Amino acid sequence: MTGRLAFVESPVQLLNVLEWAHAQSPAAGGPTAPAGGTGGAADDLTLVVLSPTDPMSRGQLRRMGGLARDEGFTVRWQEARDGRGSLGRTLRDLAPLLRSAERVIVGDPFSRYVQLLLTLFAPKQLTVVDDGTATMEYAAQLARGERLVRWHRRGTGGPRELVLAPVTAAARRKLAPTRRRTVEIFTSLPVEPPPGTVVTANTFAWTRARFGPPRLTRGADLVGTSLVETGVVDPDRYARAVADLARTHGATRYFAHRRESTEKLHRIAVETGLEIVRPDLPLELIARRGPIGRTVVSFPSTVVHTLPLALAGTEVKVAVCEIAPEWLTANASPRAQGFLAGVAGSAGFEVDRLGTQSSQRLEFG
Image (cartoon, rainbow, N blue to C red; front, top):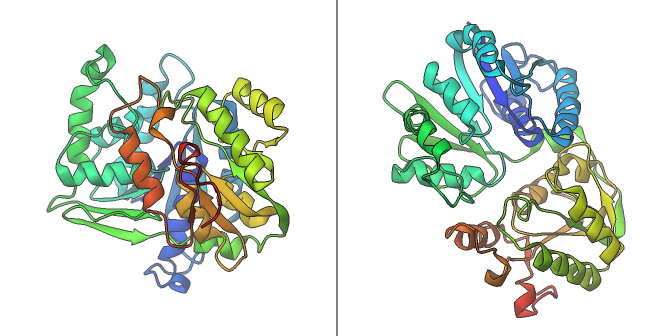
């Protein structure tokens, strides 16, 4: 048996697999015998990187893979999207590992690649770790018995969706608990356990033990989002909001999301004077290593839940600026406003809520 097999497609997923492994160690109160730098689980956990195509993600994944190897884990880089024939080759390469794995850990239950793999080889034990706020939607859809659809997707009847419908339906069953399959959700987000699942808290204990505490700067830092790139938020509204936040809080740096376009980032730099920072690791690690501003302002995203955990014990204050309804594009999903409001509203008590630009509530309460 290969023991445990993790499929990751983003740097954050890989980070959260490391956090999950650390949580299994006896030092963290977990059941696994000591092995490797994490204090457990390194000997029988193989991380398979289903490599994306965009350079920023690939670069961060390479560096995260190096950290995982330093902790004693086996990391396998799989070129899963490098042209015709890559899907079949990937399935052939991974089939032996999947057949013998006792537990499979995935970071994105909405991934078509992961859904196809699980359809062909259903695990007896499944763990889902965070890949942004998608975990909240996965848990909610699982509890309601709905098909798995990303919250920002508007259409459901396109040709591609129709072709993949059987895979999605089968994956919905494979990603749900049964009498023969256990499902664990390992998350830092406020998630109600769907029937039959176990929710385990991700406290970012590995990140805190491995890095920091950081040196703090006097100013504020802004955290970017890819809501424009996914077609949810109007680019002009977003640019004005960033400028207003930078001016209000005296921000000097803008930490770009790995999926933000070069054109948008150039516009922000020119119009606001902010220094654009392209992180080479997930923001939780960048912030923990420092230097980081004493105030970190973000739009609704996972970081308003994860940064307070990663920066626990420091003097950094995290604040969230909500998305006003008029910022949304005409093509935004009808669920977008409610979902984003839920992400912001469910942040912990230690996170300041700034309201939206339209309500002119940008001062700290």
